[in-house]
Length: 95
Image 1 (cartoon, rainbow, N blue to C red):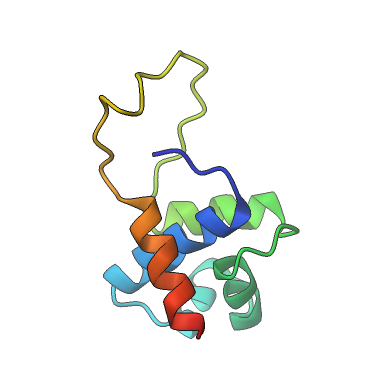
Image 2: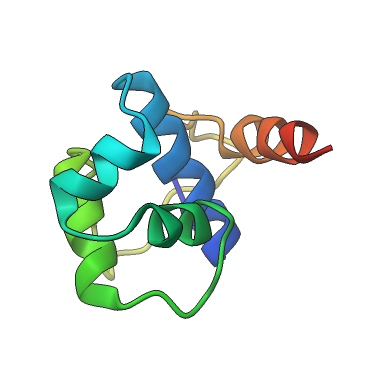
């Protein structure tokens, strides 16, 4: 799965947190940040500290792959997670 924006990353973090049945406060406590920080990251604020984002990904058991190998064509590759559905769901919940 390709994550291209802070909003995409925030949606993935929020989706995984909810799947693990963690509320924002307990997740924030687990990674040593404020609930407001979790809210901002999940909303896609682009200025989150990288070390904290990596700590959040680790706490949610989300693997970060920075390989530079060419990827397969997107049309032939079936994504494990439908990022478009997650982002669309996040946008709907804001209204």
